[in-house]
Image (tube, rainbow, N blue to C red; front, side):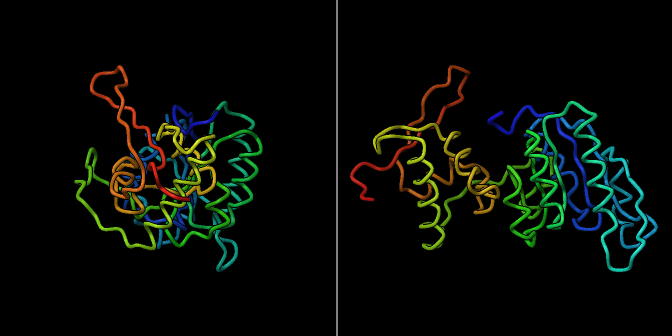
Length: 248
């Protein structure tokens, strides 16, 4: 399984370590990757701090799992989520898991699930520790999710900071080099994106203010772009390569 699409997913949410304000946007994001088989959220629901979650559970068909806080200052959800994840791994025929948390305690769980051949998508805030981010196949920041159904940011010309632009050129160029034998060879942009995510699971054009990777690549201006008919209506297949005459 090379791509993060058409997956049967189990979604496990740590209510104590993620915001509840954009649950709709989160579900819309996960719909891009496949079908959600089950949705569970873990927390101590006697805790008034979690009251904000309760209003969105029914609307999004999320099953709450009660986990009492036996020790002050400890996240009671961790052990319950980990136990459930392992039960699901061995009892349900699913393709992957979405772990919704900003807690690095789930790093080992993500690694273990991937060792079992499952895909792991993480969703959390930008404060999420890097070990958990890199343990996932794909990591999405809550901050870039949009809550309005069908809402798309209008693409306008943006001015990326030079340092950010240089970093992006290096990332994309490395991915092209990994996929080709020749600098003049065209590469399908979808494959480039997949290759980048293998090394940087949190890579996402939306982190830079672009809703699509295609638009980001065009605005960078460092690569030749070829749009080819896909044979399916007006859809185009985007191919890129290093600009001719560009030195390494």
